[in-house]
Image (cartoon, rainbow, N blue to C red; front, side, top):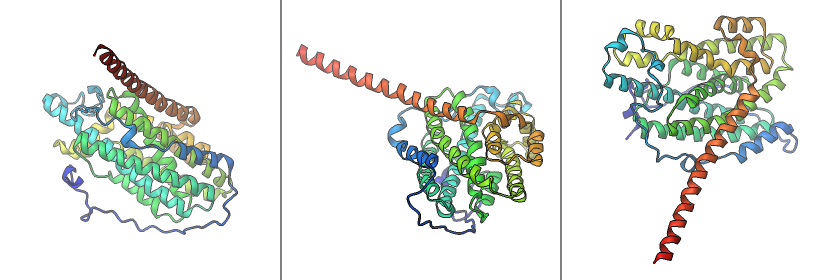
Length: 370
């Protein structure tokens, strides 16, 4: 079955492709031996941590497409509104399916954008150590596209097109000719926001398969954000005040786009709710307000860390109500992501080893009895 058969609304591109006219230079570097030790160490970790979604994910786990995450009713945007009260249980179950499809579809499209941006970084970044690492990230992002696509096709059976605001930020990131912009747009903004979204779902879902997907992807994404921090912190320290101000303006616009992306209005429209009502309900939803604020928990401290913290940017974060997140411990959050993924592995594979040992014991017993 074609993916196009599973879209709730057909993407506007008739041939199934979105073409972005990108500008910039491909940079070669003939110095192969020198490099920053911390970035080369991250590159080594990127190689060591490669994994195969076919083998690491337990795809035999069943998923109820009408309750794929097991989140409470209160997490539904419509909860507590007259629209929710009028819904049958079947309609509410269908709404859960649509929301999960919308969320994971945006994850999927964002991961494809990350894959393209990582490939652009390989092409455009001037330093060989950064080329090395971004090559491993390109493979990571390909794996994420692969597993989110499989989850949506096999377990949910429905996809949503890319959200307009996410597509706009991706386009702006790719069209900019400056080599650091794919870092800033993707590694800091889109990846940072994705990490926070993944983390909230990872920590609230009661279902084992989506928990695996999110935990293992987050283990990779923590390295990607670390990569962006290392490269941009060094580079932005050398820029003039005017050049940093240009980057800060890009961050401000991107943050507003990403904040507005997270309304899921298109889901409510698919249930016959007028757009004006859908926007108002989404804007006033207490759950979504909390969710959208939490999404900046990974972005704000990263932006501050790389040296973009001018008055205009600080004021924008004050207006968004996320300024205080600049003091969050980003390293601790990423260490936690690593530990959760490793704990899942230990638990899952220990159970498999125990099951295999039991099979062996039973075979020995049966042999002795025979």
